[in-house]
Length: 455
Image (cartoon, rainbow, N blue to C red; front, top):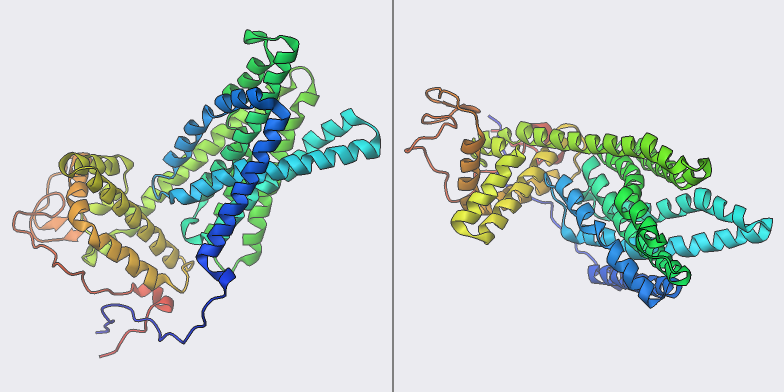
């Protein structure tokens, strides 16, 4: 019978040169933080110059209202395999600082150039809003999605990741843009004496904050979906992987142009576009993302039983990890009996197990990278280190959410296990040894595993 070594061994490392100073991680991170900080200072000065100090403060106070709701919504969508907070922080900062600065400078320059060339300022404003602004703004926001896709590929595995990254970037951009619009409206009211519901500030707040806080996220999410589908495509389809993000970007530009040009369709053009296009698009994309999240949970339930048979997971865990309700019950159980740190441990266990299921699915479909075995081992070891806290909570959640089914003697959910009961447990069931079970690379992934040894 063929056997494999307990752990995959890495090839001997060749002597490596010390990386150049510009290749060091702290240099790249420092440069990125410096770029975003400088962009933030410049955009702050530009917005304050256009709105005045009082208008800036009013715009800031009103523009921040939808931000927590939007961030919470995107974080909720990402609960199956949550990405790191630093990635979301980068996306929001890029949208609010770098992308907003690019948009303000490029839009102003292009509009002035068109007005000078055509001697038609009003026509230049219309052309700038319907043609120039969508191209510039969506390209600037898509740059953040591209950076995460290239440099944080491990955290960018599908459509939901693309939606979250793009949506948070667009939320940051809309935040800065709303400060500018609301601050300018407040300045106009100060000059004209407008106040109350009839003021320009109230009208701007109603249109941008109440009716359409999801407008910019909706546009850029199309770009994120393109990148997400590209992440799901096999590595050999390079042409498709390049065309999908570009297609999503072009769709985002088109929808953005339609939205900006709705005022040109007549007195009720804005409301017609809002009712006939924006709301249905928002509902369709919301359904798509939720459906994709349910597919991800089904992937967890389908892929993890292989690790149950190998002894890495308990029989109840795939059922519990494949249900958001069971996950929540497990965290609550851990918090109630062992405190907040135990709840965080269970949350990390759930995230690692989900990443493991997605990694196995990519390997089974031929999309795993050459580091499949190393990455699988890292995830399994991370689970094993947290099993003492996470397993009791997940077992409790599985029992709390499972329908009552008569037990089959001697069989568990996933095949024969010692003992009786719904999950194959018994008071005398054997306990896993304190050390991890021997590691065996799944036979489906032989291109990425060490060749098996013959007897």
